[in-house]
Length: 215
Image (cartoon, rainbow, N blue to C red):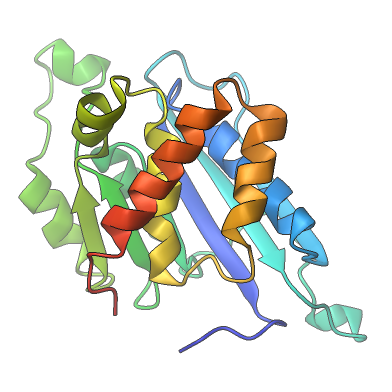
């Protein structure tokens, strides 16, 4: 169902520390403000994960607010089962945050895995991607994966902009409504280093996302 301007949009961004989870969260929020979204809240982790440790952020916004304040966005945290979209920069991190998913959720996953300490120490086994997708489909059939890291390395000679690529890949889902692509570009130019290559990554992701049959 197409969202309306008074709907509250809920986005979970999950990955590992160093992948740009917080950068992506703020990019969406700043672009929403430029798109005249009336209320934008978010929650992010700081200093809670070592490099390649688990990290997650919430972004919530409401294009138009009601006169009745009780009907408006009030909290930066998403309620269990209320996420509209998961942008996942590392596959298994999606499972760690599954509590926020439900039938209405769309998942977009980067297929490239970053094994944690327990896995590199041979104390645990990393689940196969097919198994991760199988588990996620118990929440929703809208699970879409792409090897964003490989594409960025092949097309851009760097994997530093995988987060921006995954944002572009998520845009065609329709689950980040009311934000103009041009406003993402403006924020990238204002806040990120190497804006040209990041904008290229954004549009590369959008082009890949348009190939997907999002339902």
